[in-house]
Image (cartoon, rainbow, N blue to C red):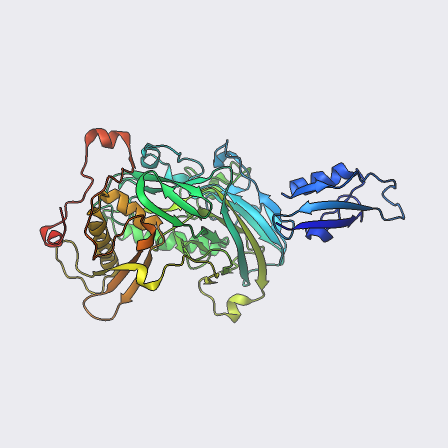
Length: 504
């Protein structure tokens, strides 16, 4: 952390331009005013002496103040949103949980300047650091996701492309923990809810760049911290198109045994201080659950971490950028739905605009450039499971990648079960650990082939196939109280043809 001695001129009252040691600060109030401004900017400092001076607003002599500043970052970064962890998200400004073009911008972002934004966890504080999954089971999903914003981006106009550079993403120091959850089938469910319909939870403690959980013993890994959601506001026309096509999907599948789409609802809708006056409009707002081609949103891309650049369509003047759903770590697919290690945190970003970029780039959906930060496990350290388009009952499907990926997940669960984990623990782990999921083949009819690469080095014991299996006491994840009282199997009852090679 370098020490910087800054000579700061007084250019006039009320000025702060955010350029670190070259910033112009009004010091007419003496050293106390300088310290106050620097403190608000999040800077650790030491005053080298009292800097009171004479001279009014129109004084002809420039007075200098020598200040020794230990900077956390090279520049002073303005914080646009600060969250209060003692209050739920639905009582705070600068947050919303619907996509709608009429939600007013909370603050303005200038191009090519870094800003820090604090974000609540996606539920707005509904989940606690405890040993019960009651909060997961009864979580109000009409309230999610709580996003920070929207922010007006300087000079962004409809048809442009917004370039968002992610400079940093971190958990809040005042809340050094996160959680991963499996939602009950009747309340959101997950990718494997046919087999694992009950609510479950694992709380993770953050230790620098690493995390571990009392609910999934025997694992420790570094986080790849990233935002699950980053997106721009839709236009009125785009919002109407979302509603049309998603309503059509739901109505054309009346017998579906799972939720096809979450349609607009006013229940639980929130837009900061304007929520009450916008209530009728918010009832028509787009839900934040799916990512969409027109604005990005909830794409849950684990490699969208520090150093990444996101290219987003601009559908309304000012772009109305929003961000949230921060993750400490996530596996490809985020299979349990609440499947990353969800956290309260902060993101530091910088925006620029490509004028008429949607036309120039032929853009119909977002693009991104991943940053140089990633988990480093050698290629030979990923134990990789394969799955094909043959379902649990032996039925052959044609190039069905969903079925194939489900089979891949089940193969990994069956394998890790042998060491003493129950299925719910492994389900959570596959969702939040840095696994690599891929479509290996999608042309060789009738089978698609998908893979999951499980980094063996996240375990504190050897899980390589050549080693003898030693069953351990690996604890248990948290479950809902009423489910525990009723009792339910912790390991899935799969058809026999899938169990032939499993060690009981």
